[in-house]
Length: 239
Image (cartoon, rainbow, N blue to C red; front, side):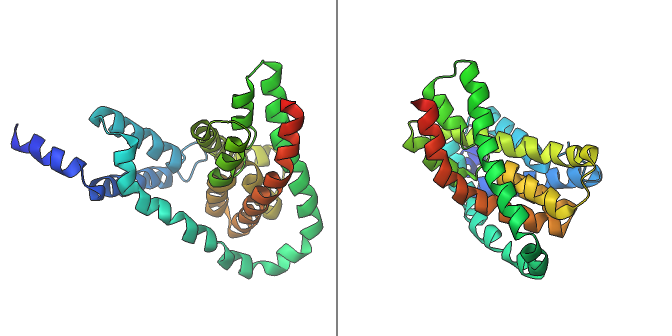
């Protein structure tokens, strides 16, 4: 073996390599998004997924090997979610003023997100395990995968659908809200967090702090409400 190949074999087995690759890819993806003026279509998460996926395929690296390093970034998801409390505290008065419309939007959005997806999929004869995997697509991945598994769905498929939903939501939310003439950042953010969970929330924070705050609230509350109502909706569809 050549020295370069021997070095690659050694590095590829260490968690530090994939942590470093993940951080470098994310920094480059974020710089590309910044250079585009944070255009909605130039989403750094999407860019990073494509690049990292290509690197893993080209190097023949399994996800398990990659995750040994990426798990350190994964761990930071918890503190990142907790950090949403900071802008929530700053905008607490605005949150109190909107409790009633938020509650109405939360229930309507949670039910619509599940029923619309299930209804369209059922019309095309999608099998029950896929329906169970599809139903929680608008909820953060940890909750969504648990719901899907409980009803016979595939957790891996649910994870893919959750990420896809978040990416689509993050890309279309700004032009869609502009087209609808919706200027209230609280409403825009709440819609983004409700429909597109964490990725939509990240996009909302890029646009405006108030939007990000309400997106974070919607993301958290939607996980709770969906966990409560989705079993009833799924039971009705699957029965």
